[in-house]
Image (cartoon, rainbow, N blue to C red; front, side, top):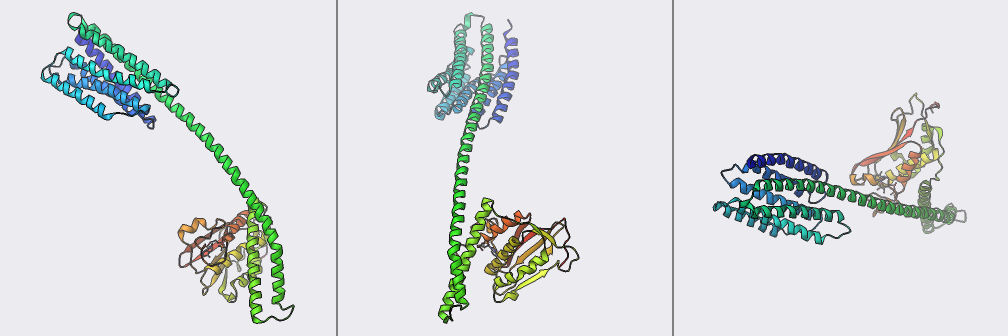
Length: 480
Ligand code: ADP
Protein backbone atom coordinates (compact mmCIF):
# COMPACT_ATOMS: atom_id res chain seq x y z
CA UNK A 1 0.00 0.00 0.00
CA UNK A 2 1.35 3.43 -0.94
CA UNK A 3 1.10 5.20 2.38
CA UNK A 4 2.37 8.58 1.19
CA UNK A 5 -0.31 9.06 -1.45
CA UNK A 6 -3.11 7.74 0.70
CA UNK A 7 -2.32 9.80 3.79
CA UNK A 8 -1.73 12.90 1.69
CA UNK A 9 -4.99 12.48 -0.22
CA UNK A 10 -6.94 11.83 2.95
CA UNK A 11 -5.40 14.88 4.62
CA UNK A 12 -6.24 17.12 1.64
CA UNK A 13 -9.84 15.96 1.58
CA UNK A 14 -10.03 16.47 5.32
CA UNK A 15 -8.63 20.03 4.94
CA UNK A 16 -11.62 20.91 2.80
CA UNK A 17 -13.81 19.13 5.26
CA UNK A 18 -12.45 21.08 8.27
CA UNK A 19 -12.81 24.31 6.32
CA UNK A 20 -16.51 23.52 5.91
CA UNK A 21 -16.86 22.70 9.61
CA UNK A 22 -15.07 25.93 10.44
CA UNK A 23 -17.44 27.97 8.25
CA UNK A 24 -20.45 26.17 9.72
CA UNK A 25 -19.43 26.83 13.32
CA UNK A 26 -18.46 30.42 12.48
CA UNK A 27 -21.94 31.05 11.06
CA UNK A 28 -23.34 29.59 14.23
CA UNK A 29 -21.13 31.82 16.33
CA UNK A 30 -22.18 34.86 14.25
CA UNK A 31 -25.84 34.10 14.86
CA UNK A 32 -25.48 33.18 18.52
CA UNK A 33 -22.82 35.57 19.73
CA UNK A 34 -24.43 35.90 23.13
CA UNK A 35 -23.97 32.20 23.85
CA UNK A 36 -20.64 31.78 25.59
CA UNK A 37 -17.94 29.45 24.27
CA UNK A 38 -18.92 29.13 20.61
CA UNK A 39 -16.02 31.23 19.37
CA UNK A 40 -13.65 28.67 20.94
CA UNK A 41 -15.47 25.95 19.07
CA UNK A 42 -14.70 27.81 15.84
CA UNK A 43 -11.00 27.57 16.72
CA UNK A 44 -11.35 23.79 16.98
CA UNK A 45 -11.87 23.01 13.22
CA UNK A 46 -9.62 25.94 12.31
CA UNK A 47 -6.60 24.38 14.02
CA UNK A 48 -7.58 20.97 12.68
CA UNK A 49 -7.49 22.62 9.26
CA UNK A 50 -3.95 23.85 9.93
CA UNK A 51 -3.02 20.35 11.02
CA UNK A 52 -4.56 18.80 7.90
CA UNK A 53 -2.94 21.29 5.52
CA UNK A 54 0.44 20.55 7.03
CA UNK A 55 -0.37 16.84 7.22
CA UNK A 56 -1.24 16.68 3.51
CA UNK A 57 2.44 17.10 2.74
CA UNK A 58 4.09 16.33 6.03
CA UNK A 59 5.27 12.82 5.15
CA UNK A 60 7.38 14.35 2.37
CA UNK A 61 8.93 17.00 4.57
CA UNK A 62 12.64 16.93 4.86
CA UNK A 63 12.38 19.55 7.57
CA UNK A 64 10.50 18.17 10.55
CA UNK A 65 9.62 21.64 11.84
CA UNK A 66 6.21 21.61 10.15
CA UNK A 67 5.38 18.27 11.67
CA UNK A 68 5.76 19.82 15.12
CA UNK A 69 3.65 22.82 14.08
CA UNK A 70 1.00 20.35 12.89
CA UNK A 71 1.14 18.46 16.18
CA UNK A 72 0.82 21.69 18.14
CA UNK A 73 -2.20 22.66 16.00
CA UNK A 74 -3.81 19.28 16.80
CA UNK A 75 -3.27 19.69 20.54
CA UNK A 76 -4.48 23.33 20.40
CA UNK A 77 -7.62 22.29 18.54
CA UNK A 78 -8.59 19.80 21.26
CA UNK A 79 -7.74 22.32 23.97
CA UNK A 80 -9.93 24.98 22.38
CA UNK A 81 -12.79 22.55 22.05
CA UNK A 82 -12.48 21.87 25.77
CA UNK A 83 -12.32 25.60 26.63
CA UNK A 84 -15.42 26.20 24.50
CA UNK A 85 -17.31 23.45 26.32
CA UNK A 86 -16.30 24.78 29.73
CA UNK A 87 -17.39 28.29 28.78
CA UNK A 88 -20.63 26.98 27.28
CA UNK A 89 -21.67 25.36 30.54
CA UNK A 90 -20.34 28.23 32.64
CA UNK A 91 -17.58 26.28 34.41
CA UNK A 92 -14.53 28.13 35.76
CA UNK A 93 -11.43 27.80 33.58
CA UNK A 94 -7.95 27.42 35.01
CA UNK A 95 -6.04 29.46 32.44
CA UNK A 96 -2.71 28.96 34.21
CA UNK A 97 -3.07 25.20 34.03
CA UNK A 98 -4.00 25.32 30.34
CA UNK A 99 -1.15 27.76 29.57
CA UNK A 100 1.35 25.60 31.50
CA UNK A 101 0.19 22.49 29.67
CA UNK A 102 0.65 24.11 26.26
CA UNK A 103 4.06 25.58 27.17
CA UNK A 104 5.18 22.15 28.38
CA UNK A 105 4.09 20.65 25.08
CA UNK A 106 5.98 23.30 23.08
CA UNK A 107 9.13 22.78 25.19
CA UNK A 108 9.10 19.00 24.69
CA UNK A 109 8.51 19.53 20.95
CA UNK A 110 11.54 21.83 20.86
CA UNK A 111 13.59 19.20 22.63
CA UNK A 112 12.44 16.45 20.26
CA UNK A 113 13.19 18.73 17.27
CA UNK A 114 16.69 19.39 18.57
CA UNK A 115 17.47 15.69 18.99
CA UNK A 116 15.75 14.81 15.71
CA UNK A 117 13.28 12.47 17.37
CA UNK A 118 11.74 9.61 15.38
CA UNK A 119 8.06 9.25 14.39
CA UNK A 120 7.11 6.89 17.28
CA UNK A 121 8.42 9.39 19.87
CA UNK A 122 6.56 12.25 18.26
CA UNK A 123 3.39 10.22 18.12
CA UNK A 124 3.74 9.24 21.79
CA UNK A 125 4.04 12.90 22.73
CA UNK A 126 0.84 13.86 20.89
CA UNK A 127 -0.97 10.86 22.32
CA UNK A 128 0.01 11.76 25.90
CA UNK A 129 -0.94 15.40 25.48
CA UNK A 130 -4.23 14.54 23.85
CA UNK A 131 -4.99 12.54 26.96
CA UNK A 132 -5.35 15.73 28.99
CA UNK A 133 -8.48 17.13 27.23
CA UNK A 134 -10.01 13.66 27.63
CA UNK A 135 -9.33 13.61 31.37
CA UNK A 136 -10.65 17.17 31.73
CA UNK A 137 -13.79 16.27 29.79
CA UNK A 138 -14.43 13.36 32.12
CA UNK A 139 -14.02 15.69 35.10
CA UNK A 140 -16.49 18.15 33.53
CA UNK A 141 -18.89 15.27 32.98
CA UNK A 142 -19.04 14.59 36.71
CA UNK A 143 -19.67 18.22 37.51
CA UNK A 144 -22.63 18.65 35.18
CA UNK A 145 -25.96 18.53 37.02
CA UNK A 146 -28.26 16.03 35.34
CA UNK A 147 -31.43 18.02 35.10
CA UNK A 148 -30.17 21.18 33.44
CA UNK A 149 -27.40 19.80 31.28
CA UNK A 150 -28.70 16.45 30.04
CA UNK A 151 -27.87 17.17 26.40
CA UNK A 152 -24.41 18.54 27.27
CA UNK A 153 -23.79 15.39 29.29
CA UNK A 154 -24.70 13.07 26.42
CA UNK A 155 -22.48 15.07 24.14
CA UNK A 156 -19.49 14.93 26.50
CA UNK A 157 -19.93 11.18 27.03
CA UNK A 158 -20.06 10.70 23.28
CA UNK A 159 -17.01 12.91 22.66
CA UNK A 160 -14.99 11.29 25.42
CA UNK A 161 -15.76 7.79 24.16
CA UNK A 162 -14.77 8.78 20.63
CA UNK A 163 -11.52 10.26 21.89
CA UNK A 164 -10.78 7.21 24.02
CA UNK A 165 -11.36 4.95 21.02
CA UNK A 166 -9.00 7.06 18.87
CA UNK A 167 -6.54 7.21 21.69
CA UNK A 168 -6.48 3.42 22.22
CA UNK A 169 -6.01 2.97 18.54
CA UNK A 170 -3.00 5.21 18.50
CA UNK A 171 -1.46 3.49 21.49
CA UNK A 172 -2.00 0.19 19.74
CA UNK A 173 -0.26 1.24 16.55
CA UNK A 174 2.44 2.98 18.48
CA UNK A 175 3.41 -0.20 20.28
CA UNK A 176 3.23 -2.34 17.18
CA UNK A 177 4.95 0.20 15.03
CA UNK A 178 7.96 -1.73 13.91
CA UNK A 179 6.55 -5.10 13.16
CA UNK A 180 3.26 -4.30 11.39
CA UNK A 181 2.04 -2.68 8.22
CA UNK A 182 1.16 0.38 10.26
CA UNK A 183 0.06 2.42 7.26
CA UNK A 184 -3.34 0.80 7.22
CA UNK A 185 -3.71 1.45 10.97
CA UNK A 186 -2.81 5.11 10.59
CA UNK A 187 -5.31 5.45 7.79
CA UNK A 188 -7.89 3.73 9.93
CA UNK A 189 -7.26 5.94 12.90
CA UNK A 190 -7.23 9.11 10.81
CA UNK A 191 -10.57 8.18 9.28
CA UNK A 192 -11.88 7.50 12.73
CA UNK A 193 -10.68 10.92 13.94
CA UNK A 194 -12.33 12.68 11.03
CA UNK A 195 -15.61 10.87 11.54
CA UNK A 196 -15.47 11.66 15.23
CA UNK A 197 -14.93 15.32 14.37
CA UNK A 198 -17.96 15.40 12.09
CA UNK A 199 -20.05 14.04 14.93
CA UNK A 200 -18.43 16.49 17.34
CA UNK A 201 -19.29 19.43 15.12
CA UNK A 202 -22.85 18.23 14.63
CA UNK A 203 -23.04 17.74 18.41
CA UNK A 204 -21.87 21.30 19.02
CA UNK A 205 -24.43 22.67 16.61
CA UNK A 206 -27.19 20.65 18.26
CA UNK A 207 -26.07 21.96 21.65
CA UNK A 208 -26.18 25.53 20.39
CA UNK A 209 -29.66 25.11 18.94
CA UNK A 210 -30.87 23.51 22.16
CA UNK A 211 -29.36 26.33 24.21
CA UNK A 212 -30.93 28.97 21.94
CA UNK A 213 -34.32 27.27 22.16
CA UNK A 214 -34.24 27.06 25.92
CA UNK A 215 -33.13 30.71 26.04
CA UNK A 216 -36.09 31.68 23.85
CA UNK A 217 -38.43 29.63 26.00
CA UNK A 218 -37.13 31.35 29.14
CA UNK A 219 -37.38 34.74 27.48
CA UNK A 220 -40.98 34.16 26.44
CA UNK A 221 -41.81 32.94 29.95
CA UNK A 222 -40.16 36.09 31.39
CA UNK A 223 -42.10 38.13 28.88
CA UNK A 224 -45.37 36.58 29.94
CA UNK A 225 -44.59 37.16 33.61
CA UNK A 226 -43.65 40.74 32.88
CA UNK A 227 -46.82 41.25 30.89
CA UNK A 228 -48.93 39.86 33.73
CA UNK A 229 -47.06 42.04 36.21
CA UNK A 230 -47.62 45.09 34.00
CA UNK A 231 -51.29 44.32 33.61
CA UNK A 232 -51.66 44.03 37.38
CA UNK A 233 -49.83 47.30 37.95
CA UNK A 234 -51.90 49.01 35.28
CA UNK A 235 -55.12 47.75 36.83
CA UNK A 236 -53.97 48.98 40.24
CA UNK A 237 -53.01 52.35 38.79
CA UNK A 238 -56.37 52.61 37.05
CA UNK A 239 -58.20 51.74 40.26
CA UNK A 240 -56.15 54.29 42.17
CA UNK A 241 -56.84 56.88 39.49
CA UNK A 242 -60.58 56.16 39.61
CA UNK A 243 -60.50 56.51 43.39
CA UNK A 244 -58.60 59.78 43.10
CA UNK A 245 -61.05 61.14 40.53
CA UNK A 246 -64.02 60.10 42.68
CA UNK A 247 -62.44 61.71 45.72
CA UNK A 248 -61.68 64.93 43.84
CA UNK A 249 -65.20 65.17 42.43
CA UNK A 250 -66.85 64.59 45.81
CA UNK A 251 -64.51 66.88 47.68
CA UNK A 252 -64.84 69.63 45.11
CA UNK A 253 -68.64 69.48 45.33
CA UNK A 254 -68.52 69.53 49.12
CA UNK A 255 -66.10 72.45 49.17
CA UNK A 256 -67.96 74.55 46.67
CA UNK A 257 -71.10 74.94 48.79
CA UNK A 258 -69.42 76.55 51.84
CA UNK A 259 -67.09 78.50 49.53
CA UNK A 260 -70.02 80.02 47.65
CA UNK A 261 -71.42 81.08 51.02
CA UNK A 262 -68.09 82.72 51.95
CA UNK A 263 -67.88 84.52 48.62
CA UNK A 264 -71.54 85.55 48.65
CA UNK A 265 -71.58 86.88 52.23
CA UNK A 266 -68.23 88.64 51.89
CA UNK A 267 -69.48 90.24 48.69
CA UNK A 268 -72.59 91.60 50.42
CA UNK A 269 -70.32 92.97 53.18
CA UNK A 270 -68.12 94.56 50.51
CA UNK A 271 -71.16 96.17 48.92
CA UNK A 272 -72.08 97.57 52.36
CA UNK A 273 -75.53 95.94 52.42
CA UNK A 274 -75.33 95.73 56.19
CA UNK A 275 -73.71 99.07 56.93
CA UNK A 276 -70.47 100.83 56.13
CA UNK A 277 -67.20 99.07 56.99
CA UNK A 278 -64.21 100.81 58.44
CA UNK A 279 -60.97 100.62 56.37
CA UNK A 280 -59.53 97.71 58.33
CA UNK A 281 -62.76 95.73 58.02
CA UNK A 282 -62.91 96.52 54.28
CA UNK A 283 -59.32 95.29 53.83
CA UNK A 284 -60.10 92.02 55.62
CA UNK A 285 -63.36 91.50 53.77
CA UNK A 286 -61.53 92.11 50.46
CA UNK A 287 -58.98 89.47 51.48
CA UNK A 288 -61.71 87.00 52.41
CA UNK A 289 -63.53 87.62 49.14
CA UNK A 290 -60.33 87.43 47.02
CA UNK A 291 -59.17 84.27 48.80
CA UNK A 292 -62.62 82.70 48.34
CA UNK A 293 -62.64 83.51 44.61
CA UNK A 294 -59.18 82.06 44.17
CA UNK A 295 -60.08 78.89 46.03
CA UNK A 296 -63.23 78.53 43.95
CA UNK A 297 -61.20 78.85 40.75
CA UNK A 298 -58.74 76.20 41.90
CA UNK A 299 -61.57 73.87 42.87
CA UNK A 300 -63.33 74.47 39.56
CA UNK A 301 -60.06 73.65 37.74
CA UNK A 302 -59.68 70.45 39.75
CA UNK A 303 -63.24 69.50 39.02
CA UNK A 304 -62.68 70.17 35.32
CA UNK A 305 -59.56 68.05 35.31
CA UNK A 306 -61.26 65.13 37.00
CA UNK A 307 -64.28 65.36 34.68
CA UNK A 308 -61.94 65.32 31.69
CA UNK A 309 -60.10 62.29 33.08
CA UNK A 310 -63.39 60.53 33.67
CA UNK A 311 -64.42 61.42 30.13
CA UNK A 312 -67.39 63.31 31.53
CA UNK A 313 -66.50 66.76 30.24
CA UNK A 314 -69.38 68.10 28.18
CA UNK A 315 -68.27 69.86 25.07
CA UNK A 316 -70.94 71.68 23.14
CA UNK A 317 -69.67 72.24 19.64
CA UNK A 318 -71.51 74.84 17.65
CA UNK A 319 -70.91 77.24 14.85
CA UNK A 320 -69.71 80.57 16.18
CA UNK A 321 -68.36 83.80 14.73
CA UNK A 322 -64.84 84.05 16.13
CA UNK A 323 -64.78 87.87 16.06
CA UNK A 324 -68.00 88.00 18.08
CA UNK A 325 -66.70 85.48 20.54
CA UNK A 326 -63.49 87.48 21.11
CA UNK A 327 -65.50 90.65 21.51
CA UNK A 328 -67.71 89.03 24.14
CA UNK A 329 -64.66 87.69 25.99
CA UNK A 330 -62.68 90.94 26.01
CA UNK A 331 -64.29 92.52 29.12
CA UNK A 332 -63.43 89.40 31.10
CA UNK A 333 -59.88 89.40 29.83
CA UNK A 334 -59.49 93.10 30.64
CA UNK A 335 -60.72 92.40 34.14
CA UNK A 336 -57.98 89.82 34.55
CA UNK A 337 -55.31 92.27 33.41
CA UNK A 338 -56.64 94.54 36.16
CA UNK A 339 -56.28 98.23 36.82
CA UNK A 340 -54.09 98.94 33.81
CA UNK A 341 -56.37 97.07 31.46
CA UNK A 342 -55.08 99.01 28.44
CA UNK A 343 -51.99 96.80 28.74
CA UNK A 344 -54.05 94.24 26.88
CA UNK A 345 -53.53 95.01 23.20
CA UNK A 346 -55.62 93.35 20.50
CA UNK A 347 -54.30 92.61 17.02
CA UNK A 348 -57.20 91.30 15.07
CA UNK A 349 -55.96 90.39 11.62
CA UNK A 350 -59.28 88.94 10.52
CA UNK A 351 -61.67 91.67 11.57
CA UNK A 352 -61.46 93.44 8.19
CA UNK A 353 -61.30 90.28 6.19
CA UNK A 354 -64.05 89.63 3.70
CA UNK A 355 -63.84 85.98 4.50
CA UNK A 356 -66.07 84.22 6.97
CA UNK A 357 -64.81 83.88 10.55
CA UNK A 358 -67.02 80.92 11.32
CA UNK A 359 -65.52 78.39 13.71
CA UNK A 360 -66.91 75.21 15.13
CA UNK A 361 -66.20 75.26 18.86
CA UNK A 362 -67.52 75.27 22.42
CA UNK A 363 -67.76 78.97 23.29
CA UNK A 364 -67.47 78.65 27.05
CA UNK A 365 -64.48 76.31 26.86
CA UNK A 366 -62.71 78.53 24.34
CA UNK A 367 -63.22 81.49 26.66
CA UNK A 368 -61.82 79.38 29.49
CA UNK A 369 -58.65 78.70 27.49
CA UNK A 370 -58.17 82.38 26.61
CA UNK A 371 -58.69 83.35 30.24
CA UNK A 372 -55.98 80.88 31.21
CA UNK A 373 -53.58 82.29 28.61
CA UNK A 374 -54.18 85.89 29.66
CA UNK A 375 -53.99 85.21 33.37
CA UNK A 376 -50.71 83.33 32.83
CA UNK A 377 -49.39 86.24 30.77
CA UNK A 378 -50.25 88.52 33.69
CA UNK A 379 -48.88 86.17 36.34
CA UNK A 380 -45.62 85.27 34.60
CA UNK A 381 -45.26 88.36 32.41
CA UNK A 382 -43.62 91.67 33.03
CA UNK A 383 -46.09 93.94 34.94
CA UNK A 384 -45.01 96.96 32.90
CA UNK A 385 -45.26 95.54 29.42
CA UNK A 386 -48.18 94.76 27.16
CA UNK A 387 -50.07 91.51 26.81
CA UNK A 388 -50.83 91.08 23.13
CA UNK A 389 -53.78 89.06 21.93
CA UNK A 390 -53.59 88.29 18.22
CA UNK A 391 -56.28 86.70 16.05
CA UNK A 392 -55.07 85.55 12.66
CA UNK A 393 -56.06 83.40 9.72
CA UNK A 394 -53.49 80.66 10.21
CA UNK A 395 -54.20 78.42 7.22
CA UNK A 396 -57.10 76.95 5.31
CA UNK A 397 -58.17 74.83 8.29
CA UNK A 398 -57.52 77.01 11.35
CA UNK A 399 -57.74 80.47 12.85
CA UNK A 400 -55.05 81.19 15.40
CA UNK A 401 -55.58 83.07 18.65
CA UNK A 402 -52.39 83.82 20.54
CA UNK A 403 -51.44 85.60 23.74
CA UNK A 404 -47.96 87.06 24.00
CA UNK A 405 -46.18 88.50 27.02
CA UNK A 406 -42.72 89.90 27.67
CA UNK A 407 -42.06 88.03 30.86
CA UNK A 408 -39.68 85.56 32.40
CA UNK A 409 -40.16 82.97 29.64
CA UNK A 410 -39.86 79.20 30.01
CA UNK A 411 -36.60 77.24 30.21
CA UNK A 412 -36.23 74.74 27.32
CA UNK A 413 -35.88 71.78 29.74
CA UNK A 414 -39.42 72.57 30.97
CA UNK A 415 -41.04 72.53 27.51
CA UNK A 416 -42.13 68.90 27.73
CA UNK A 417 -43.73 69.49 31.17
CA UNK A 418 -45.77 72.55 30.34
CA UNK A 419 -48.97 70.70 29.48
CA UNK A 420 -48.67 68.04 32.17
CA UNK A 421 -51.20 68.34 35.03
CA UNK A 422 -49.91 69.66 38.36
CA UNK A 423 -46.64 70.70 36.80
CA UNK A 424 -45.53 74.26 37.45
CA UNK A 425 -42.49 74.13 35.20
CA UNK A 426 -39.99 75.57 37.66
CA UNK A 427 -42.43 77.87 39.50
CA UNK A 428 -43.19 75.39 42.28
CA UNK A 429 -41.46 77.50 44.91
CA UNK A 430 -42.51 80.91 43.61
CA UNK A 431 -45.24 82.86 45.37
CA UNK A 432 -47.26 83.14 42.16
CA UNK A 433 -50.66 81.53 42.68
CA UNK A 434 -51.44 78.38 40.76
CA UNK A 435 -51.55 74.61 40.88
CA UNK A 436 -50.35 73.86 37.34
CA UNK A 437 -53.55 72.50 35.82
CA UNK A 438 -54.74 75.39 33.62
CA UNK A 439 -52.68 74.53 30.54
CA UNK A 440 -53.30 70.79 30.81
CA UNK A 441 -57.05 71.48 30.89
CA UNK A 442 -56.64 73.90 27.97
CA UNK A 443 -54.88 71.26 25.92
CA UNK A 444 -57.51 68.63 26.61
CA UNK A 445 -60.31 71.05 25.80
CA UNK A 446 -58.87 72.27 22.52
CA UNK A 447 -58.14 68.69 21.46
CA UNK A 448 -61.78 67.84 22.17
CA UNK A 449 -62.64 70.66 19.79
CA UNK A 450 -60.30 69.19 17.13
CA UNK A 451 -57.93 72.14 17.52
CA UNK A 452 -54.29 72.49 18.54
CA UNK A 453 -52.33 74.24 21.23
CA UNK A 454 -48.66 75.22 21.39
CA UNK A 455 -46.23 77.91 22.46
CA UNK A 456 -42.85 79.48 21.90
CA UNK A 457 -40.78 81.02 24.62
CA UNK A 458 -37.40 82.59 25.29
CA UNK A 459 -36.05 82.87 28.80
CA UNK A 460 -35.91 86.51 29.85
CA UNK A 461 -37.84 87.70 26.79
CA UNK A 462 -41.30 86.22 27.12
CA UNK A 463 -43.71 83.61 25.84
CA UNK A 464 -46.46 83.26 23.31
CA UNK A 465 -49.19 80.64 23.72
CA UNK A 466 -51.74 79.95 21.01
CA UNK A 467 -54.64 77.79 20.02
CA UNK A 468 -55.54 76.86 16.48
CA UNK A 469 -59.31 76.83 16.21
CA UNK A 470 -60.90 74.74 13.45
CA UNK A 471 -62.77 76.71 10.82
CA UNK A 472 -66.30 75.74 10.12
CA UNK A 473 -66.54 74.22 6.68
CA UNK A 474 -70.28 73.89 6.21
CA UNK A 475 -71.57 77.39 6.78
CA UNK A 476 -70.42 80.90 6.12
CA UNK A 477 -71.38 83.18 8.96
CA UNK A 478 -71.59 86.90 8.24
CA UNK A 479 -68.58 88.94 9.22
CA UNK A 480 -69.16 90.93 12.34
P1 ADP B 1 -50.43 77.50 36.88
O1 ADP B 1 -50.31 78.86 36.25
O2 ADP B 1 -51.60 77.39 37.79
O3 ADP B 1 -49.18 77.03 37.50
P2 ADP B 1 -50.75 76.44 34.16
O4 ADP B 1 -51.10 75.05 33.74
O5 ADP B 1 -51.58 77.54 33.63
O6 ADP B 1 -50.74 76.41 35.75
O7 ADP B 1 -49.26 76.70 33.75
C1 ADP B 1 -48.29 75.68 34.00
C2 ADP B 1 -46.92 76.31 34.15
O8 ADP B 1 -46.50 76.81 32.88
C3 ADP B 1 -46.87 77.50 35.06
O9 ADP B 1 -46.70 77.09 36.40
C4 ADP B 1 -45.67 78.28 34.54
O10 ADP B 1 -44.48 77.77 35.08
C5 ADP B 1 -45.69 77.96 33.05
N1 ADP B 1 -46.29 79.07 32.28
C6 ADP B 1 -47.55 79.12 31.78
N2 ADP B 1 -47.74 80.26 31.09
C7 ADP B 1 -46.57 80.96 31.15
C8 ADP B 1 -46.12 82.20 30.64
N3 ADP B 1 -46.91 83.00 29.92
N4 ADP B 1 -44.83 82.57 30.90
C9 ADP B 1 -44.01 81.79 31.62
N5 ADP B 1 -44.38 80.59 32.13
C10 ADP B 1 -45.64 80.17 31.92
